[in-house]
Length: 176
Image 1 (spheres, rainbow, N blue to C red):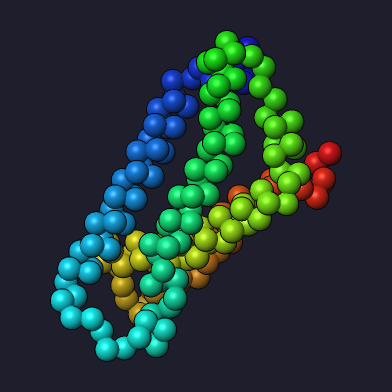
Image 2: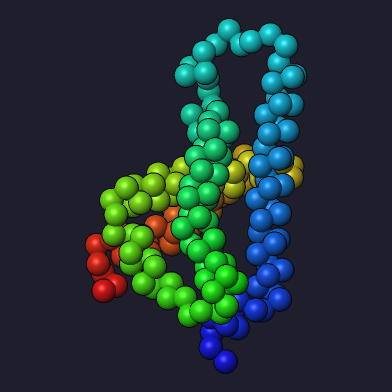
């Protein structure tokens, strides 16, 4: 059996795909609810300007970073996921050459720029989100915070390098 047919008709892949979409939607809804909750608890605006606050800029910009990531996901899914589904269902299991598609898509500078912006936004989002997740679950101790932040930074770097490696490799023709 050919791999693309196996992966396109495998119920486990479909289940994971649906779970991923559900997780993204739940994360967006949770982020919006958290932002609204934070704003409603703050009846009077702070006297301190956000730029002077003790928190990091990316902590205060999670909503903006989330929107950038969402826009990036829309571009990414329209370029790859949607076209793969069209090839699979509209063209009746037609052979879909993902390598050739990636080669064509990633030769454009604007696409590389969109991916770079998306991955940088993801990096800042993960940098704060990794530590924040531990804080949410009550693991907020000076004893562990530096370790959590260090592990989070390593995790963020690995994820970002992995995500940007293909666009860079195709753009600079390392895989041709």
